[in-house]
Image (cartoon, rainbow, N blue to C red; front, side, top):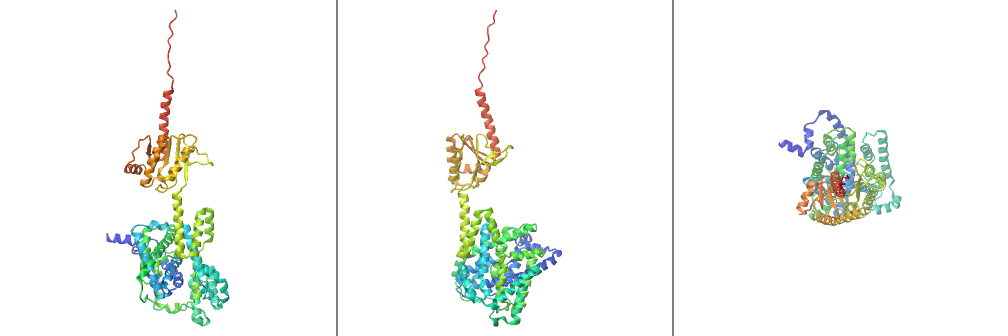
Length: 584
């Protein structure tokens, strides 16, 4: 019993305890490949946030192991992510006031709070909120993050130290700052890029980012590039996590509540998109609530190991899948490989040139850009395209935190508008008696004496009056007033709303005065229960509740036939037989 409950909480542990040795070779190979890709990216993302590069490694090791135990995805690799790091940097930098120690502490606290939000959400089974950020919002967000990061690395690439931090300000100042380009730094950047491109074209399976960074580090070590004015990472300190604890103001935690909540939402949305896509490709399912719990545990583990918040690393997950990784053991192998580097090669990492790191960041972030998919969205859905472009512009102009908040607000307003003023249709039948929406472009005919109405939204207090207006308008616009009105209740009557049933009572009364009977088709059991709770007692001549629309049509046609038969019987003339007298 205890073992079964443990496996429910730690599904990865069940996989590892029942491990198949046939998977060991592919898993080790994939794990080493993942570590080769994760090392340079983790260091670069730490530099992106303005903290010691070694912290990027802290954010890989324990979170990877924790996810391997708690996660349900066999391919997903967790670790530093561009969007996650950009959100953290945007939230923490104004609060740190230039103090690197406080910046690091704030990052740790924010990572812990993010994990805590995820655990709370998992406790209340809110995994379905993975779709809270719509795909257009996420597309705009990721493209905005990518452009912000890429532009932010131009100073490292060109060796320009006087560039402002804001996107718009940097975009304006960069062309005039090109005159102060540091040529040796630019050559180091271009050399790193050239190695990455050549390896990708000649040996695509090789870890191009790691090889390029190793080559740049070797050049830095042999030629002492600092004397040529090229910046390097410098002293990384000891291999194991250690943080000084200066005086810290707990009041700053209040300023991290909203950013950490935003970070939890953004992380989980991108997390689930990656997990679901690779699970679908490999023929299994992932549990959204368990994944939410695993993400929370991984972030808390990162905070305790003095790292920063993590999410799904799509590029490293793709490497794992491409190399044939079969189980969560891949994450453990990768984590141990990174730990070995941390313990035995830490001094060498200090020689990494900053322009090489900047180029690695640009290359790894480039995959987030998807301009073509944004403009293809324009043809499919203009509202989605507008939302995507708005999110992109908001992130670039007002910053990441404000941009995401504005985009989510706009998305919610669009959703409310759809529910507040939804579309509706009149339904009819074809030659085979099948229901379809009626329009000028088809030959779907109405059922004689019947109006079938569908309101494409759940009814609630703020749209029920619009429902009444539209229903009356359709009834009044018919050439001949229908004797029956069927409403598709399966679509619109989804919950017990006092305002809705009060309005329904008014609708039934108004229709009765016109000689019209209302039929609610669908959700028969629920609607009858709700009618009873709201004390709405009506006769069958006023209101009928039936299982579905087809049943309603058959019932009405049956009643119409009975009524017609009664009419015919009343209209048949009485035959009088006259007997003529016999003539003699």
